[in-house]
Length: 233
Image 1 (cartoon, rainbow, N blue to C red):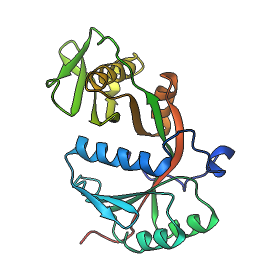
Image 2 (cartoon, rainbow, N blue to C red; image 1 turned 135 degrees about the horizontal axis):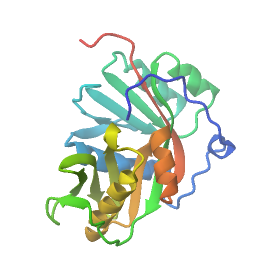
Image 3 (cartoon, helix red, strand yellow; image 1 turned 90 degrees about the vertical axis):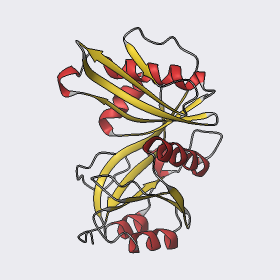
Image 4 (cartoon, one colour; image 1 turned 30 degrees about the vertical axis):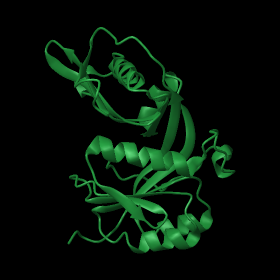
């Protein structure tokens, strides 16, 4: 998730305000699977913290991130109370009412207008210019695209059962708007399908959504991330 500060999350689509989830699985189990795959992709430990998941990210941007779907008012208040420093982040998946927004206003916004997205995964040909790293036994698929010997785009995806979590999809600035992101996604889908995955999951930024929507991904729920205001200890 990007680290740039943004205004508080605003729901633009009435479907999200009604809590519409266009999946048969329901939101909370999907978020559970996403957390499992994301932690696997990042090599991070995860454990339950009430209704939330805590992932020990140990990244430059934050030490810990808690992820929760559709929390109760009491649970959200508890999580906000425990998000005290800027290296502790809280991501909330699902529609927010006025009470939730008021509670979250005690924190600083990290992202807004992100979405959880899903798409079917099927066997596809590996694009000729996509390099698939590792072997077929790895749960985490890594792909890259090189241009004149330089890595121009890359991505990875973690397979957890029938689901695959797409992660770290990136194109270097000098190589953008050449369709490389689409080829990275195709390469990851190829590798994930070969490992038995049938459904893709990801958390998408505003810019990323344009790519994913063009590839047939659809939005499941809104997503926002906040962080504490105190200095890390």
